[in-house]
Image (tube, rainbow, N blue to C red; front, top):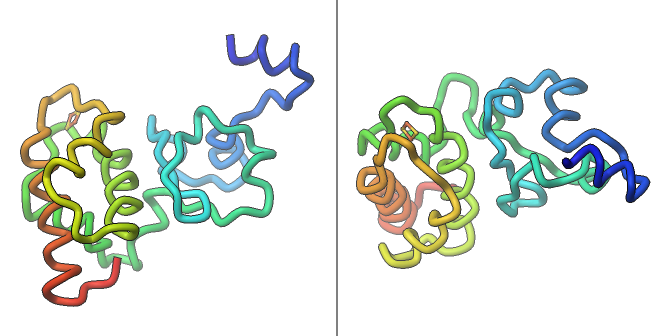
Length: 146
Ligand code: FES
C-alpha cells in the first residue's frame, strides 16, 4: 500500500529505513527497528521518506554506543533487565533517549505515555519503564550525559 501511495503522490519508493539499510549498510536500520533519531527527535523511519531525512542528522541504535561502551540508556536497560527476546529493545531505547534528552526528570507516568507507541510482545513493560527511570536518575544524580 505504501508503494501505491508513494507512486500516486509522485514520491520516491524508498523509505528512510530502506535508504539507511541499502546506502549506509546500517544494521540497526535493517533489523525491524523503525525507531531512529532525526535531528534528535524520535521518529519511525518506516513512515518517513528518505528525502525527508536528506541532510538531517540521523542516528540509529547502532550509532548510540561509543565503540564497545554502551549508551547510558542501553546500560540502564541492561541493568534493569529491560528486555527478553530483544525484538523491541532498539525502538524503546531510541524513544527513551529522545525523551530523556528532553526531560531527564520524566516521571513514571510520562515515561509510560511516551513509550505507549512502542509494543513489546514479551510484555516486558515494567522493566523497560524501570530502565528508563534508572537512566534518568543517573543523568540527574550522576551527571551522566545522554
Ligand atoms: S523483549 Fe521481546 S518483544 Fe520486547
